[in-house]
Amino acid sequence: MPTFPDTLPAPLANSFQEQPANNIVRTQMDVGPAKVRRRTTSNVSSIRVAYVLSAAQVDEIQTFFAEDTAGGALGFDFTHPRTGATVTARFNEPPQYASMNGLYYQVTVSLEVLP
Image 1 (tube, rainbow, N blue to C red):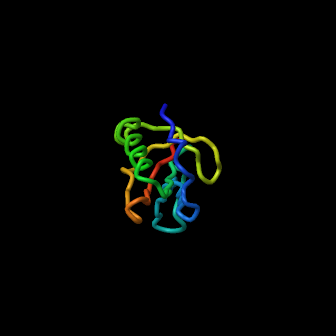
Image 2 (tube, one colour; image 1 turned 180 degrees about the vertical axis):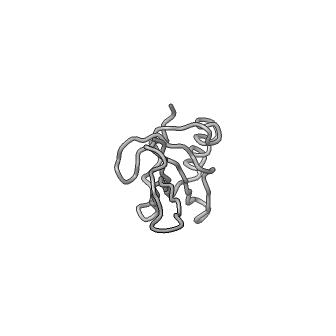
Image 3 (cartoon, rainbow, N blue to C red; image 1 turned 90 degrees about the vertical axis):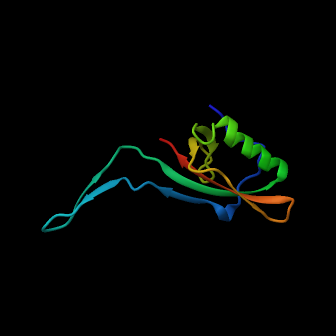
């Protein structure tokens, strides 16, 4: 399994977002409170992080996305920014690139953490 490039810097601390999946099914009753049950025993969660990268590092993450993960179709090992644990992740969408000053780029990555 490929591993997210460890040559890239740590993500921006204020860019980290995490959202666990909504794993419940809610059924409204004619009378009384709704019935609620768990949908599955495990589910995916979403992570969004941003990096400040040089042009060479942007090429590295583009190559990783296009070739190592087959355009986001394959999972990879990723160090979770909050826990530090190695998790299996997959891209939710292609990385987004925004030029900061022509030399550096802010790259936003949206991932799903697989069970």
